Length: 305
Length: 291
Image (cartoon, rainbow over all chains, first blue to last red; front, side, top):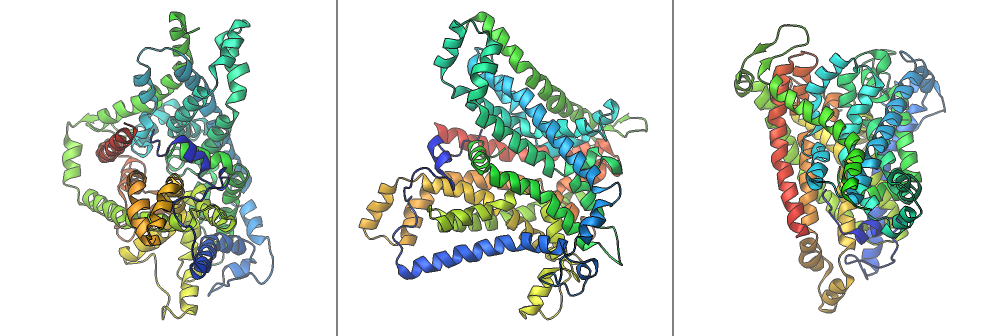
């Protein structure tokens, strides 16, 4: 929707920038300034990384050290105590990891199942009122899901979809749908028509054209849509808070938020809390680092969900 | 291939997504409007009250306090996010290895959860156990530890702002970098031949050419801040005295723990209306720039 940038820029914008051009900006800096900006980059990176590092370090402190006042900067010894306590916390961290992963996988499946055919239809078929239908699918961009949770909650209670991963995944899918439809439509439009025409001459029907010709060509979009669906679902907090009222149905962010008030030795169990934060950050970081190209392209393409 | 028959086939492919949006966006929207006209709870009898809920909102001091706090938070954090995002984008827009690395690092917190980052900062800002008080004490910047999440709502808000700036500054930065890199290098070169200094070039060339991106990112950021919830739920829990309860927080409180669904629905409609105004701005801007 908000195509902030033209196509070439989007692809060129980031780390994997194809062109080695020097853009309008910082060129031919003289000696001193060059070192100064380099130092600024290093300082900035350090500041941004320190909180993450602090969390990881706090998670491997011993039980006693994690509760120390004043806190230590670096752990005096390595200990997995915090992770052990997290392992057994309430229903066990595996339950909550399982819930988060389950909701995320369902969200990915729902998003793909809905938006691959939709993108295909929007890009390739002469449908009456196509633009109106397209905008209808983008409605989620105009109505924030936060405002829809009250009626959705009521609806889910009636349908017995509260405390269910399917219910939560439905809301997460609704959040991701506009972005995914937009991306899929663009992806299908970029598939060369000659490929399809050849397949039609060979006797393929439209479904075979979709699965055999188009699908292999839109794999990057499938990866991007899945990646964003995963990250949204894994991180989403408010809808989960509303829909999941049973302890055993909690996702990872919910149980951690609940744990901030749980006590071990006379206060919040800070070590366990940071162990939880570390665990919930790991998949996001891993996917970001592995699939950076897809992440950034999706980000700049859809501009903003 | 694209005959009359195909329009029916096309609709068939489009149908699942349309049905989904009808069921989980349009229908709830309609039901919310109806709910807002009723006293509506899960168990008790429903009662039609007309615009009663809206009158109640108008007279509810907590509603106005929340709205004011949400606007205040938005007004304070948006210029910080845009300014810092822009400065970092200017600093890292070229493609040297160090700058690419810096960009990747600054962007990293955008991908982690708001819940996780809020819990992380909740600990960092903790009075006794947090590293921020420890660091400020060690640097002799403060004499005694600061109670970040205590009786002073402003202190709590600034702590939240710091955490959110860390979390989302990379968002604007990436979009600004993309826009800066799209500026034709001939323009810069010509101005350099004319002897323009770096900041003159930023002022006369870079900023005007990425103005549209700045405006759009600002709007997206404003919408995000107006819908703030996670960070306040986790870090301040709306305290002290509900002074840091944002609009979404208030809707959450009324709809769920209190189960006043009709009242919650009415407030949701008001909030959706406010967001709609921002979104219309955004669409108009996007459209105009396409023309």
